[in-house]
Length: 420
Ligand code: EPZ
Image (cartoon, rainbow, N blue to C red; front, top):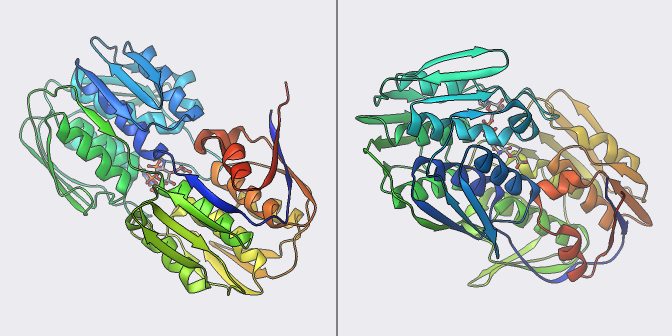
């Protein structure tokens, strides 16, 4: 398992190209199952999760070809079952369920199971499928759904932590070929959901209201192939913005869309980070001292849970107290104990972490656990004195394209140690 060897203390300077959004590319690739015609998705990030989704589509019978950051998917004939071994490796692949049900009116997909950040239930997904008239049962670790015909209905997708991103995606992809009108109340408003809706509409679907809490889908009889360019990854952009602030640097995030990042940029500005948007993207610079800010993660357009760990790493560097409250996932503090190994002073109080920032961090070997927790450890290592070894960086490779290369381009002293 590869690791990163990071020599801290160098300010990040220069520019970094922001890749296509992983969390948009995955459901959009799954949506290609809804038509027998070829689709071309551009600006698909070269990530293990994306390549894995390609394997799943291929396993289902689609022809999948990656080249130069694009992927061509042609799902002429497909089977309606997603195998346990495939789905358990990446819970995001559960979003094949909606298109399989939409196109074939039957689907059997393994229960995705939980992960290090929480139980990751799918009750809202199944509620949505049932509201469209599907018979849904879970048996032997699989979800089986089938319907003679799918008929539009009204669906409330609000759960204990707000809406569900992939649940909204799954219901959208099942509803586009249902008969009649479907109205989703308390839909997820994330930009990645909007991107999926835009792709589905390019395929001939009739979706309006995506990006807001009420989305209306008028079913059509079939969908055609389409081309689409994936939006830039707002979480990757936020990660590099925070790394620039943590290392007292100045970085142009080329292609970043500030309009997808208001909550993150608001908190960085409150902390004293200088931000400048231009046609090229977003420039982040830190000059002088920053101050601690409090964070509470919320559904979009609130502060994204996928940036919570990275922000915690920054707050650990700033003198003062920062209270970081995680409202989306029940166990998303796995980075706290690893940050403490670098000298961070953080105490967990229920859903909140109390960060007593300002103690200088010093390098140490640390273990990556979840995708974003790993990014937090890299940020802390870049700012710490001495050398930090971040182990198990395969977590990072799931969601950050060429992170070591991009960081070196910004002047960071990062080396990937390949272990056989
Ligand atoms: C998506 O996961 C993202 N993944 C996650 O990013 C992100 O953290 C999450 O949305 C929240 O923004 C992808 O898009 C591939 P949810 P998703 O369903 O859709 C509860 C990353 O680091 N819930 O919006 O699986 C759930 O327990 C990953 O890139 C139910 O209760 O998340 C959680 O508390 C990590 N019942 C909350 O909703 C359900 O049926 C939000 O989960 C579904 C979810």
